[in-house]
Image (cartoon, rainbow, N blue to C red; front, side, top):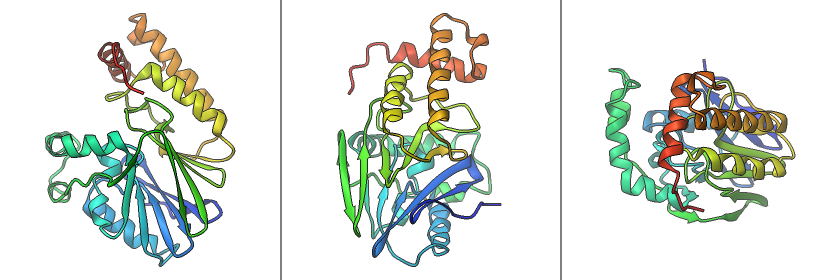
Length: 261
């Protein structure tokens, strides 16, 4: 059963969906609402739209993509009235590789006969409004800051802050190993260091329960220990599962000569 909307700040909400344990944010701004991520397909995005009416009947003016992964962005097309905002590399990844991502997803173990039609109908829709390092949105008297703190879970992660609440996307996870398949493990540590300096209140992770600064600091140290173990070839002795440790080792090799900001 989907949990109801939880107010984590003044008219700032999150809803935790059991499918993929995904969090969606909603920020009520004057005469409209801003949502953080759009879920994984059109069917789920339509469900999100219906469920928004539990907190507001205001129209959705803005969708913010925390990064390019399909579980956060493949619902974008179902908000045609909204501007979609994200990092420039989020736009690039969805524009250049969106069809490939969709094909890989349809061929994955995640797919079932029941949910396949919902994914087949997805129209991959990249952000139209992009930025490189930081930008601010002024909507209905609210000030929303968007920042790219560095490489981490992907090359396109951003954090969203409003009135002390931080939406971290998949830079922060709770209840499961972080996903390193597209990650920059060493840079992720520096990015979390920068995030920690910003924290003033609740942190909404991409997946799992709401956390605080202590959790983020602990996650940073756990990733550091995992990186050290992977560098030493001790994949069976790391703090994460062997599968996750293998992903870290592979990405350390793949990103050894990466030159991205």
